[in-house]
Length: 171
Image (tube, rainbow, N blue to C red; front, side):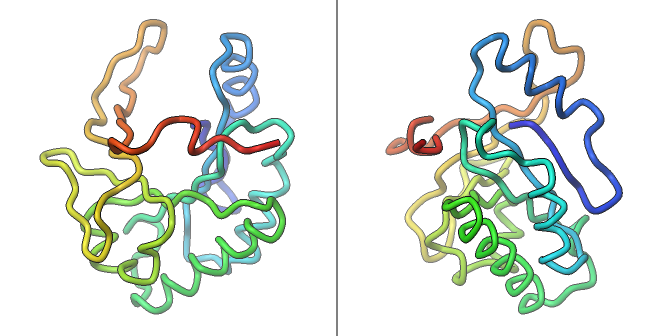
């Protein structure tokens, strides 16, 4: 996944270079947006301004974390996320994958988002989610190493019934 936008101010300065390098090495490209307290329409317009679906291989991802939504109630977070997801579905034809921690999902998103693709971060055990038999992608470490990458990388695995093909954009 290539990080694009964190809010209306912070954007990854390496976004284009990362996409180009991924393409050069035949690595599928996907992008994500870090959900913030800004209005969902503004966040979506920011994401849409750069996220060109013709250049993406994978479904978009929206990253929902305490850092971005601190101070919002459960219902406010759900409305914000649901609006962002509906805008993505309307414009791109795809509902984004939701990335969050196991505790964030339990505290703020379940059961409203039980039927979405879920990418769950849980570093000390395999995630167990209420109302849903399993996650779709599990981020199990944030301290992986990849040759040619100087900093830590996240390590993920698909649920036993999932593969990369499930998250590809069908063009």
